[in-house]
Length: 327
Image (tube, rainbow, N blue to C red; front, side, top):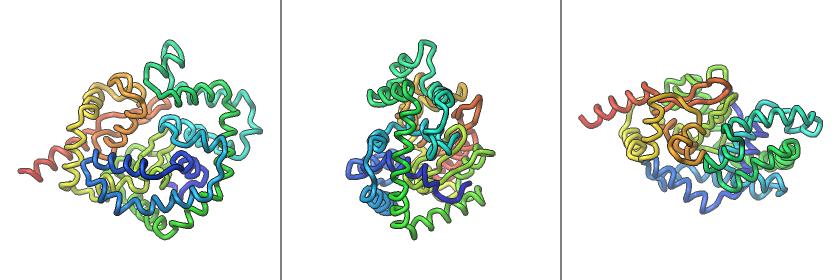
């Protein structure tokens, strides 16, 4: 595990969430409620420091075309940019010096992962129900890859000072959260979520993030681990009533149950799941993050893609734990 926030990637994610306000708070509470938790109480206990972090960033951020492009970006597209820059971190500072053909090849490879369809990119975007804004951004990236990456890289570079000021604003709280994450990684048996991360990320770095605090973003070459994710999943490796509520809530939702039934047949990557269950890729990403938190699914790397599969140990744990609590 990389034990510190990565400045460039943290700035990238901060820019994507730079308008944090009442609407974003309501969405976070709704997501927590969907997990079977008391969203308002969890938010009050854990998200005040997140609000403080974003407020400090917003106060000092430099607006630009790249910042506007990132603001509110679809999680699938944000993950694509993160994957590209993780493979080529030098492009944050030196994308202008890169060969056009090299950039086009790297971007083309990444785009195929999210637009793969026998009839081409446009059909793939339509079939999977991407939003109009995401389709427009994907087409821009495919047509002018170097220009788009230069725009994003410039926004990140201009806002590194804003990130540093935001980090300083929550220095005490962030130090505690990072120390907690380090202790979990050094002893992954402490929590179920870290057990899952530890099992599926051998040879793949885990990078902590506070800009997407409840998300476990499993990309091909890196996993970004939200510093509040284990709190949302439950802090104990022992089965609890709270875990029973969260798991039962997930199983009670038709879309999540359909996803689990599809994964019973075979492991699939995000876009394959979206196509099979008739949901948008962004919605599937949201569901998969919840199912990772419950321990019902896990990630495996195959053919250069992150595939989801059922997690027999996690499901058995839930069934046995439910019996212990209820019988």
